[in-house]
Image (cartoon, rainbow, N blue to C red):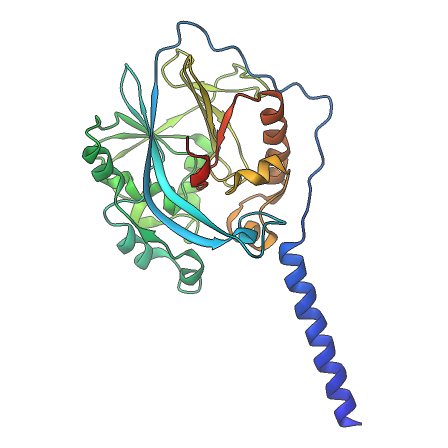
Length: 305
């Protein structure tokens, strides 16, 4: 009788574990947006020439299934930590800070112990050194897609630079702590927070935007979800239009297949799950209706082009 009881318990626990594992990787296709016009405005002929340089500062290799719902249980995916330098006639702009000189020390100081095994990374270089090694001019300003540790690490290496964030993200920075926000990064006085407000100027489907140089070359739009003040950044020139979407997704396949992050990953990292999911559906439609658009998630190294 006792043996039978334990047999049932073991079977029940096994079923629970199996159900949990299946739930981790179960494909979840989001609803398609219908009847929505997401066509982007035409790039004007007089838009200044810009050039994009990708700065890879670190990486982590994980199962493809951890990067989006329904990903492969067999294949691995290498995710990058980095930044993008935009050469512009009025002054270079850096999108995100990438990993900085003190990234490891910041991680050790501020990442909670139980999260460290999940967030481990291999650092390859730091953003400022990588820019200098390429012989490029350092940026005059930095725009954060959002303020998580792997995007804000390198800020302190750029002395007296303006770091642009919108009011929602600055409030998030001021009111949240670890593991979302690292005090060792955001309280550093070597750089200046420059808070901007979105203007009531539509840009495609987005009802508000912020044109960095007022020339249509670098346009910031709200992409709230992963953090309250997350943004997307369009970089335009006559040859290409790129859309840097931060951590709305980690894997471009998530946009193409309308899939959210694997639910545990989303639970650990997304500030507002529903908003993040809504953005994925929107981004999918933007990509469909603008086939020449190059959409770039911050960590999907394969999409960096």
